[in-house]
Image (cartoon, rainbow, N blue to C red; front, side, top):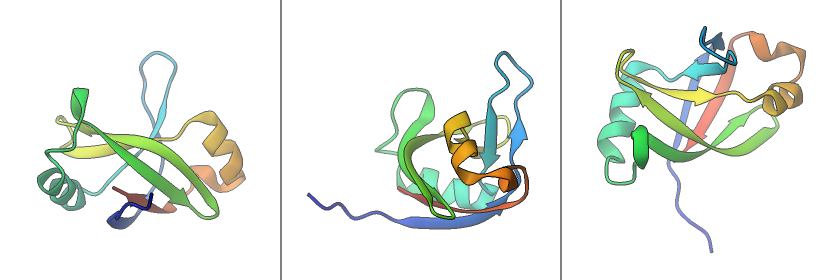
Length: 100
């Protein structure tokens, strides 16, 4: 069953959370995050989680974005297996597509 998805594109540099386990994230631009939050508020799940598909280069994966009220933006997690598939350039600015 095919489902319509809106595509959002942005460029961002990964950053590491300094808490336990040191997760890596990409922050969506604030204006884009506010647009997504307004458009999809009825689809969000617990803790502001919003199911999504992410694409960086030829790497595509099912994931979720979370709204961080401190930064006023959604965060896209970059798990180790995704970073590995992206290759050695994963720490640079990345062109990202998020499908909601």
